Image (cartoon, helix red, strand yellow):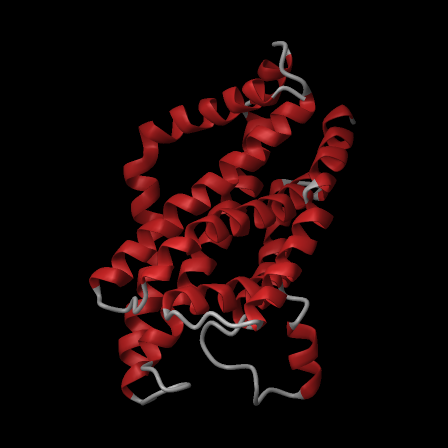
Length: 252
């Protein structure tokens, strides 16, 4: 696999994005900010503190990671599907020396890059709000990229298996929404039923949220090592699958 050729796929997507980034960034930025302001300040007026911090401080690190998750997911579901099926971009790329695996790698890296863009913007915004309490937040940036890479992989798996573009509704409703709601972003999971607590441990977003909270507030503990190991396990498990499944889908 030639990384330079994979970069050309990334570069192609980045060039298109540069023409649309104003509207795209605004729309994708609006939803997480809505959660942050409406829930952080609105609901936060009724919830005094969680674990010794204000409610908006509690949810803001999780918003960083959920933004990264959704940015990669939108890009590598609808974006990739449109390029592959409707725009025939994949056909055009395959007419060049670029191999299919290099194409998939370029798509993965672009999805992770979109996560990095949106996650970093959210960090800057919550910093302006005075919600970042530690300079360790800068060490969070590689984990935002890893979050994007993980969910880009998961989304490309969905893209490889859905019968049509409308079927992405199932992916978002049955997979991403539960991961989002039960990731510990909006409430601690400690008081949930035991079965929910146990099931939440297989939620990759939960571990990214834990890492984000640790770095945002300087609470670096041994438990973060466990979260990092879980994240590494998911990356090793998921990244190879889009190369296999997308190739099978494209050939068929």
